[in-house]
Length: 154
Image (tube, rainbow, N blue to C red):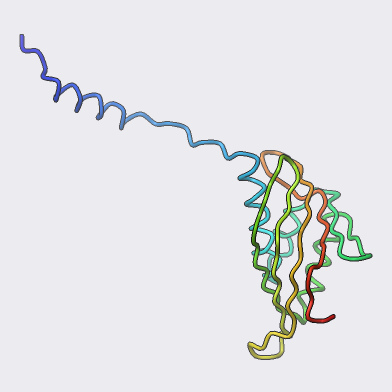
C-alpha cells in the first residue's frame, strides 16, 4: 500500500474545497441602504423609471423639500413624472454615511431644460437626511428631508 505524499493530500484537499459551494454573504443593512441612496440618483434622473423610483420608498414614505412634503409612494411616483417632463436632471451622490437606520448624503444636482442642448441652467448642492426601514430584505426610504446648501437659482 502506497501512502500519498503531502503534495497529493494538499491537491486533493484543494480540489475538494473548490467543489464545495459556499453561500453568498448577506449584504449588511449599511450596504443595502447605501445601494438605495445610489439607486435613488439613477432612478430619479431617468424619466422612464418613475415606478422603480417609487419602490425605493416605503409605502408611506415622505420626501420634504422646503415647505413641501410629498407623502406616499403613489404621490412620489407622480412627483417624479411631473418633474421630469421639461427638465433633465443629473444627481451625483457623495459622502454617503449610514448609521443604523439613519443616513446623510451630499447630492449635487445639475439641471437643464429638455428642449435645449447640453447647457446646464441650474446647480444645486444639498444634504439628504434619511430615515430608512428594512422591509423584505430591502432598505427603503421612510423619510427624506432635503437641506439645500447652495442653489444657483437663488
